[in-house]
Amino acid sequence: MAPLHDENRWPPLLVALRRATRPDRARVAAYASLFRCPAGWDAYAEFLAGHRAWLDDLDRALARSGASHRPLCDGSGPDPRRVSEELPGPRTRAHALGYLYVYEAFRLGCSVLARRIRGLGPAAPARDAGRPWGELVHELARVPLEEHGAVVQGALEAFAEWERRLAASLARLGLAPTVGRAA
Image (tube, rainbow, N blue to C red):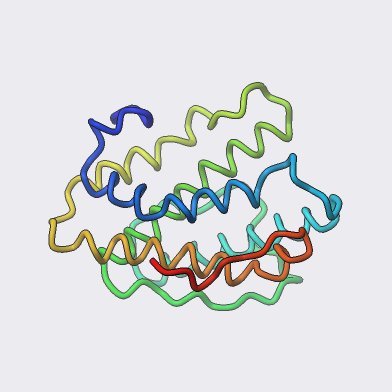
């Protein structure tokens, strides 16, 4: 697998995904920052619980579609107290890869956040956390050029659905979601 910082060695589709989702990833990073918690830890905990519920929904949408992915296995599972909205399943294999791009990016981000919270050293993904990402990068390299647009569209839709779903929690944190931005 090519190093994450060496864009020249990435598959062209991964470069296109990163460029297309740059504003989405920047907003997620701002939302998830531990250093911006003006509303207090209860509001932040609510945001994290909503985020996890959304990841569970994305996991189920990928599973329903038959998309090959590594299910979340941190032991927490869905919170039975939360009413979950069913996330629309991906329409095609290429669209599913866009969902999977977002899913694996969030998995890596969760790993970094967990390490930061536990104080286990620098905020870097755990060694094994990058394995599913590497498998996704390999898969993206094999996507035919004519399907690249569907992959990017799937990723943009997944980010937009995440932000829509967490809009209330984001508002309580004093952050204004931007759902509906032009792609």
